[in-house]
Amino acid sequence: MKKNSTVITIMKRELSAYFTSPIAYIVTGLFVIASGILFFNTFFLINRAELRNFFGMLPITLSFFIPALTMRLFADEKKSGSLETLLTLPVTAFNVVLGKFLASFITGLTLLIPSIFYVITCYIFGSPDIGPIVGGYLGAFFLIAAFNSIGLFATSVTKNQIIAFFIAFSICILLTLLNQLAIFLPSFTVKVVTYLSAMTHFESISRGIIDSRDLTYFLSITALFFGLTVQSIKQNGSGR
Figure (cartoon, one colour):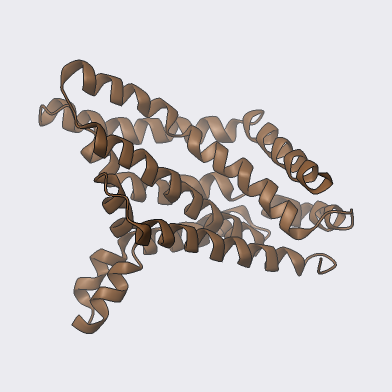
């Protein structure tokens, strides 16, 4: 119970820090503008009431915006020295990382809230298939979790927010575009590289196809970078 209370306390503190500062609002505003351009480009220019373009570019847009949300999580505390102070308290590195992960994950999900307007618009002016819409949001759920864990890891290894952003962005965009880069690689590596691409698995889920291999991929990426973050934070504390 005490451990759960610690995680919740850290999560609430981080959420409060997000929503009492301009960071979350600036990032959300820019995301709304970017996603709105993608949606209304299809809606007005192609005259189609669908979310295909919005979801099709979502992995690329999230590769930028999720690192922007996570870049300060540990970098700020490492720079100020408050992380070392936090780790001297009766709290484990796992709990600290979990609390911050949950806060950044929730904040990441709030980026999608304005897109509900796009769904409503589609149903007012057309008859879109509900399957790809539900699949798109489900895929976004797992994608945000994976990119958040990458962002957490990046911010745990540096005191500089800008460096943390570029580390996370580089990893996220590379994972996203691996399927595109595969065409330049030897044929025997294409299958493996394509499987490692986040875009490949997101597109599969966004079509409304729920495959355990896609879910396993995102859960594995999330768990891998979450674990690496815990180990990185342990090196800053007492090893707990």
